[in-house]
Length: 401
Image (cartoon, rainbow, N blue to C red; front, side, top):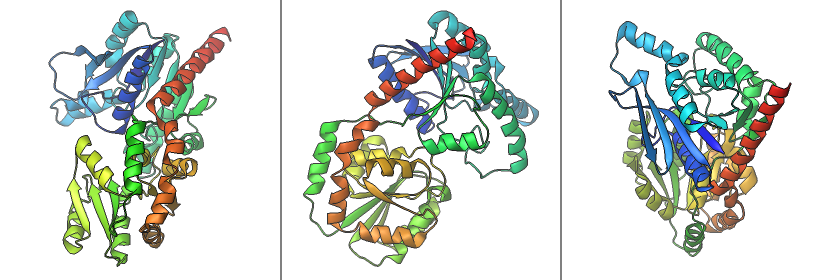
């Protein structure tokens, strides 16, 4: 198949998890023998309107990002309105259709490119798949249920109409995310499928990490938090839970950056058991994963997936996770950790105490190799190829009808 992936940004502009997921999928599809192109915008202030390059075999077409340009006042407001319905990418879409001839279009985060591309490819009679990797269609702040209700009323009205009319098939990495969109009356009458996110696995490396950790017998048990240091990620509750525990044989390592960084630094100064390492590069973070024993994922919002759980399992760490969003779904399947009520600081503290026992850690770690293959990028490529075939069939039915 000729598969066109669309996402606001693409490598090397790695803004977040969506970019990471799309890059893995693009290269996985290419490896499986498909032709792959990506449509995105550039975060750089490029003088050229459109650019093209080939990255690891993937054809990458970029438009300029209206919000990345230096604009003020009325010009800035106009730029934001263009992003809301970005018809300026039409010429680039025309170029891609002519040069690449996509059999299916897989859209992801369209926050800057906009859902205009849904309508464009719908009119071209090319099947459109959408993957809900976050909540930007529901909430202009991207944190579901956290922004101005009046603004969101009109915001939802527009995007609900777009989703119900121009999409042939919708996926999400968790069933909960699909259920949230259904509850808000998005994608009505559109077939939906849960397709989990993936990590690039090295099964030998994972087995080696599990073996090395199985043989650890030192008294110190090292807990780990990795992610944005924001209240919605549960870092405030985690620090309070850790403060309540008086065990001198536990340690907490924190990696990341965000609004609550000053609070984390204060906690480090007050408690020698806490170590803050800041925002780490992937190779540095890998060493931290290998050095630690248990990951804590204490999010207090509905994580669309919770990739951090699989990344931790990849390096032999069982997980203590909140009962919000995809985290709960992953742990229900893998059984490589336990969940606690997201807002219950006492319950989190109790779980930390439970996992300070190495026998408990070993029992959950032993299950990792049984289930982690479900989250391999090979498995995801297989799943999405099935999605694309179904979307093509759905489009054929529509055209016949």
